[in-house]
Image (tube, rainbow, N blue to C red):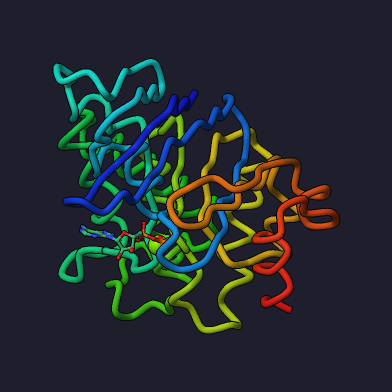
Length: 240
Ligand code: ADP
Ligand code: MG
């Protein structure tokens, strides 16, 4: 579903991603961890082409992203992304936030899109908030709306960039619950998070980055129990 082959990216002369090789299969849940500034967000943003790679090859959902001639809008519809800050439209109701893209981008009728939106709002447990405005919702509820909005496009891949980092502690669980259920349903997911308990439980694989490189990757249990690399051990020991 996703394959990085010797990918590098520069911001000016700064080598932010260095020779990345990474393969993610359909239905896999991969968690990316690492210190702040290690390139996690940049790697994630390359997957839906919010950032362009500088060299190497990157294949996502059958598209060669290093190829100049891609239809970016068509490509992006099948990839949902959820950010730390929910980026909902404040002047639109919850349901209108979700209906927007399926109508505009997929060409669904308003009724079809509303039906779809309602079903995803139920799925994330907030069907009763359809007519509310984002400001009337808690952070956890807003983030669940953002996830429902992503799902309403019927994506093949969902990307999450620290989806719980801006939330009060008591709201983190409700968002992780939604993500866990997506994972169990077989969604291909790439998740940047500092929630190590969640990573250990839900991830098929953990990727540890430092200084723009993948330092270590492996099954979650073996990574957390027996990290091979010194830098990974240091990182994990500081979290406790
Ligand atoms: P992480 O998500 O792991 O914290 P990022 O991918 O956001 O790391 O950033 C990696 C490095 O690239 C950081 O040093 C950051 O300052 C730098 N960086 C990120 N975005 C840009 C940009 N648009 N221009 C220049 N440098 C950037
Ligand atoms: Mg980041």
